[in-house]
Amino acid sequence: MYFILDVVAQLDLSGITEVIHEKDPRGTQPYSPQMMVALLLYGYCVGVYSSRKLERATYEDVPFRVLTGEQHPHFTTINEFRRGNLDALRGLFLQVLKLCQKAGLVKLGHVALDGTKVQGNASKHKAMSYKRMRAEEKRLKAEIGELLRRAKEADAEEDGRFGEGKRDEDLPAELRRREDRLEKIGKAKAELEAEAKQARARSLRRQVERAEESAETHPDPVVRKRAATRAKRDRDRARELDGGDDDDLDPPMTGDGLPKHEPKAKADGSPDDKAQMNFTDPESRIMEAGGSFIQGYNCQAAVDEEHQVIVGEGVSNKSPDNGNLLPMLKQVKENCGASPEKTTADAGYWATGVTASCEGLGTDAYIATERQKRTTGSDPPGGERRYESEEQKKMQEKLRTEQGRKIYARRKVVAEPVFGQAKECRGFRRFLLRGLRAVQAEWSLVCTGHNLLKLYRAAVMQPG
Image (tube, rainbow, N blue to C red; front, side, top):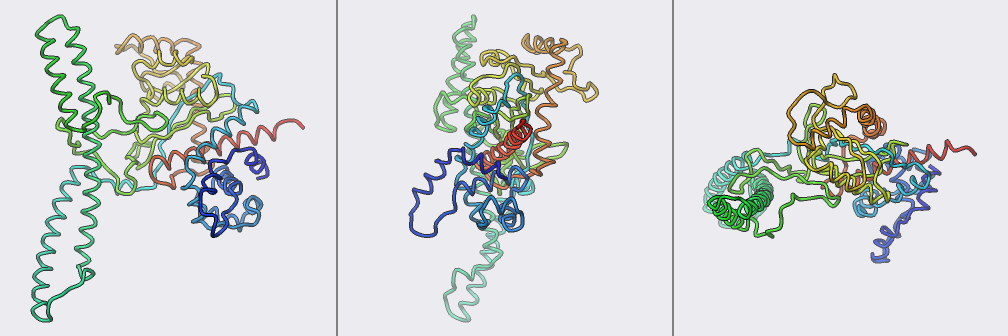
């Protein structure tokens, strides 16, 4: 409690205070930003996340009462403070990480990467596939048409009996409910179609790039001519789909450079029948987690082995970890000023070219190239097989060496306990906010709370 107050006193909260100063000074005086930040950080340290529970704690829990100085902000105020300062609150992660570095808790000898799926503030039963959207849209239009026909007949009968004129609120509740649902489905369907068009356009542009290379380098003139024709056709089709830039080849990214989910698209740019959209939180996705499926997000953490301090964090709505390795390593280098000497990650992070990219960042990577069987313990996967590339073969041989086995065996005892501490010890099982940007800030607060606990324990254990 007092430790949190000391830490908050060292933090730069100008991002929050500037927002407050920009508001009209007339009216109720806002609560102290330092107090509100201390309340949130302490809550995320001890596993109290709900704004309602935080308000109740300011009455019932002594540490919270001390932190707030016997002030009791309403839960709506706490929630609005959290939602209104997403970027500033996320920036606290880096400031606390710098304090951990200053305390000697970050060595960057070995950093392990891992991800965990966290339930979003939405139910998977509120998600609907594109195929079902079309069927539901058709059904609702038919029902609305039938209800309107009945309403027209009833209006005509009543006008004949009582005179003309009915109010809008006299619209049947069944009709209003169906129209509202039809509008929601139409909006979600349009968003899904727009995303699918963009995804298909990017795929076509990547095909154009390959076809143009073939048109320039292939020895057969017939093949070159066909490739040039195919490149022009695909480029024109991509422009028709999204009207975008011909250089738009990469998948959509989060602000941290993590790949975002792209819906599967058919050749004509329409969504695949199984492509889904959630009505409650459209940016969340259905993901496999522990043998079941949740509507949530993929949360990433890069953990330093020395004291299990989180040195990089991020959130994506793409379920596989593929594509997250390099953005996370770049963030670690930016956050800490240097790359880790060694980096470990499981098979979900493997992709062609990652070895050279890791070397370019100055880190020695140990990445499994295929999923290991549970019976092999901590050893990396082995066995005779055909390799997809020379790069994969070299990495597999590297993991089979005595040093490689020892380093890779440390991966799960470095990264995985962090998620266990957050989920089991501090009870963070579900996001409170909705939308990727808000979820990123909330996950950052969870990671900041984790690092504060490491910093506190290190301070307590210091002699004197």
